[in-house]
Each structure stands twice: as structure tokens, then as C-alpha cells.
Image (cartoon, rainbow, N blue to C red; front, side, top):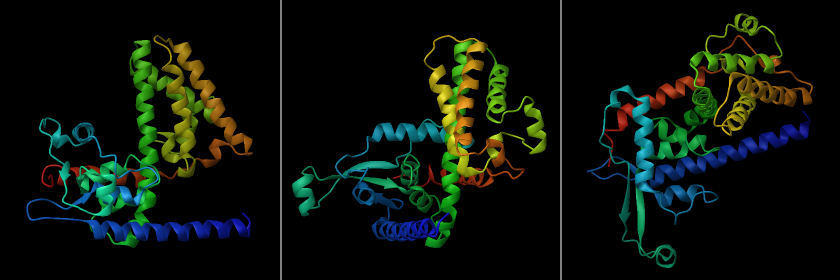
Length: 303
């Protein structure tokens, strides 16, 4: 890496720190709370932080947002599995704001309240907003503590994306082949064997003490390639209404070969980035914290 590249990266880091400090200050300044409700933020204030992809004019579809939030939480928090009632974490409100903005652009004078939990859930859905997600997820942390843990939130995001695309792929294989879980396991073994160019995947499992998935033992800065590989297999197989194992095997090898070629293009090999270290631990810790956060706030801190 050249000195100019280092300088550019440092400048970018400094810019991100400054930007995050502005976000932190803004969120603290706009946080609201009244005696009858938990702390909340207004959509207009939240959207103003990211004007490139959030619009103050486009309010969130409340029912859709609440349904997705409820479904996600009851799937992940065992204590809420049988809960039917949806606590309110987002609410559309009328405002008495007669500012120039509302008069010119928002004549209905409507806004929305979002609880801390709703805000965290919102920003989980947007890339490059990990600092903001961490701000809501860790209410008692200082700016510097949030800055430090943001990297773990970034790892959590891509790790969850990989896990989700693998679940989607597994469901597709089971549905299209009418087989059992064994065929999914075989397909995944074929993917990894081709990706790492080995005829005996068990050798790698033993060498790197892999207990769950090779993803855990690949350096996180390469995880995006793992996601792309499984996503490609899923997309290709979803185009068919019926499949047999040979179809699954053929596509698994083809997509893994392409993924490996991307590494070889830069004179690298995927196995160079394998380690006995479990790189997934920070991501799993964020996942545990998030479930605990939901458990503590979903019922008690609703509007």
C-alpha cells in the first residue's frame, strides 16, 4: 500500500469519525420523552440524518413495519413465541408545527414517533448505518464505546446475511427436491469442497477445528464473497420448480468455482484466509445482545 493510499484511508477514517460524532450529537439532541411514554425519536429527525436514502415526506407504513418487527422478534425471542398482541413501537402523529418546512412541504403536518427499539430495527435494514444501529442498541455507551463496537455490528450484519441466504438456499433445495436435510448438508459440503479445491473437506474441518461453518474461520473482510457465492446458487436454483440432486450438485460446483476464481484473479486462494480463530464470535455476541435488547424493551417500552 502506498503512502497516498494510507493517507486517503486515514482521511476517510477521520471523516467517518466526524460524521459519527455529528450523528451521535443529533440523536442525543432530538431524543424525546414524556411522562407517559418511553424515549422516542421523530421520523423527521431520523430521516434528516440520511437524506440520500430517507425522506422526511415518506412516512413508514406502520402496519407493515409493525408486522415485520413482531414476526422477527417472536421468531428470535423464545419468551414471546406465543405472543399475539403487537406492542406499539411506531405511531403516526399530528403535529402543531407551523415552520416553513411543514407549510410548504408537509401540509398535513404529520410525523411519526419511533421508540429506541423501532429505530434499531429500522437501521438494521440499511448498509453503512452500523454506528447508528449501535447507538440505539447500546443506550448507555459513550460515543467512543459505540465507535469501538461498530466494527462488531458490521460483522454481525454480513454474518446474518450469510446465515439468511444459506437458510433460503436450504429451503429451496428441500422444496424443489422433496428430500430431507441430508441433501442440503451434501450440497453445502460440495460447495465448500469446490471453493477450497479439496477432495476431502473433512481434512479442512479437522485442520481448522471447524465446528459450525467454514465462514466462522474465514477472515471477515472476505465474508462478502461467501455471501455472493451462496446467493448465486440460491438465485439459480430458484428458477426451477423441480430439481434432482445432480442439478443441485452441478450449480453448487459452478457457483463455487466462480467464487474461487475471483480470489485466483488476484493471485490468492480462499484457503489462505482460513484460520483456527473463530472470527464469528463478535457477530454472535451482537446477536445475543440484540435478542436481550428485544426481551427487555419490546413489551415494557412500547408507546
